[in-house]
Image (cartoon, rainbow, N blue to C red; front, side, top):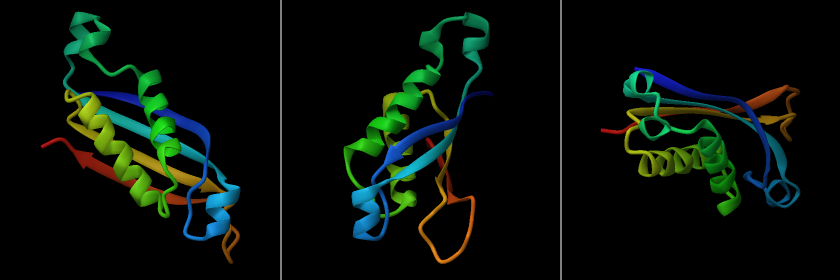
Length: 119
């Protein structure tokens, strides 16, 4: 099995439970792992794998498509879109975090991690 990885993708998103979060926005960080068969290792052909720059672009595109109240919903939407775009993906994992979240606690990051399998 092969993993295509995008680690530390930073982008700005307008997601959150409160109206203020959706208006002001936050810097988000995504870590993405797409697992697929290892055919690309032998073929050396980009058509047999997932282009990591396109995977990163898709994360930003999904984030900009609407304002999500939860990172869970954003992560799920991204994973569904990725599997639809690249059926070769057997499993996709995304970790989304907000830097310095607006909360009553002091934390460097808060977030979610989702794993979706292409069954």
